[in-house]
Image (tube, rainbow, N blue to C red; front, side, top):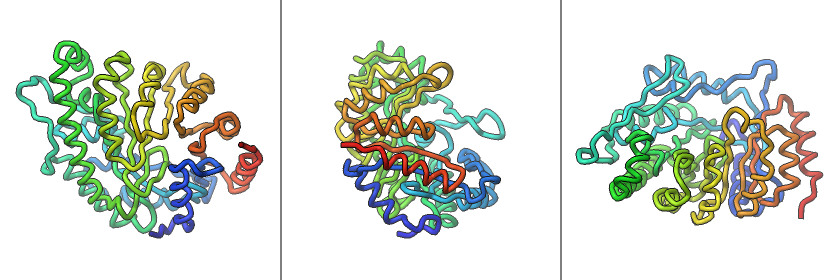
Length: 354
């Protein structure tokens, strides 16, 4: 497979294969450099594809993608996603947006009565039909230049919280644990069906896929997560969520876990029980946590045997590369010039690791 915007795509693919095997001696570096540093284009918001005519939006995606050089492990790509809980919408929920700019989208809960609800994937669902329409249009116009990749499938308790309402689900975990377990099984079945449909729609077998954090795999890949875990105990996480995570990861060639916020850190040790989960992406959140030095956490994640993906300043990346032992480290950078890129890469190369 060739991509017009990345002449060395086959080399990058091999590097990513080595990354997932833990065989690289350099970190994976997703480096994008604008062709004109005076005209940096922002990525068109994927949520805008949820409604209306998309021809002009596709033109903007192409213009944006063509405005960069994609260096080292960086793969030109664009995501089809209408909101963070896109998967929940495929199960019958509706998506609402904050305003016409559609920067934020959320799910309207649909489970009001456990006795009159069926959690299932239906290809007649309007959000699936829109997903197919947008994906086919984007792939037709863009697939020779960049990879069009699917939305994250956010399953488990996060999906159920979106469908039920987080506060109601917290009560259900105590008062109706068996009902919750059965609902999670339904979500697992649905996620399998959606993955099969996505494989065909996005031609995953031939193109591979990309995550929103820039990681590439030649096969199925996703970002399992459980933001809802910030509100529950380790015991509940192990009882309800870990089986879902294992189910999801079993269906993936590669998996990257999104650990979101200080209140989720207590579940880190439990993640070692998920076989096949190899990389963690830590997101501290906003406020004080965003400005804290998390090196101790990086070291703990490293000690537990996980790789990591970072979007940090170059100098911090050098420190991480020097202090963290894993051979599965990925960094996302945006340098202004090729010269800046070369200087940084030389610094990385000069750090000798055993």
